[in-house]
Image (cartoon, rainbow, N blue to C red; front, side, top):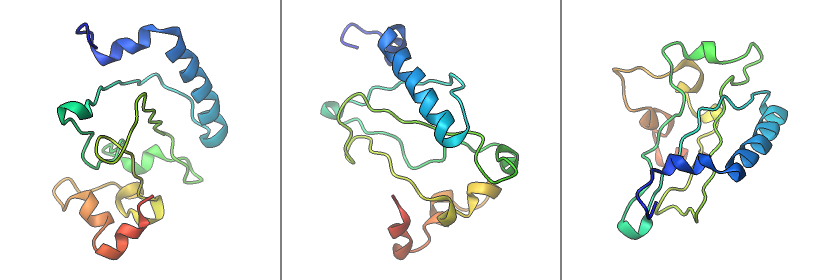
Amino acid sequence: LQHGWPPSFIMMYDEVWDIISRLDAIMAQTTGNSCNMDILAWYVDPNAGHTGFAPHRDRQPDDSPATFRPDGAAMYTTAWMPWVDAVPENSCLYVVPRWADPGYYEGDDDDGPDPLTVALPSKECYQHIR
């Protein structure tokens, strides 16, 4: 980064692919999914005041139910791996469990309210965040 290369160039190193290979084995064992090589990299510089992303769902296709197996397991999973200290101020990951997110399986109405507002309609619902 200090020489102007984009963050995704980290994937030129064998060590990254070794970690991805190990992660693929863990994902296959725990979710039944394998790595599809949709690999992205960002650099979030907290010293420059940068932060991570606003709350979002990584998967939101037009036909949301089609992305689940008959037993309800997701056919797509995401792994997030920080390479530097990740704290709430710069890019920490939080999760709303499936049972607390009404749009998780059915999908969200593109013209409706913000999905986060639907999943967390009251202060009490914030207790569901993990």
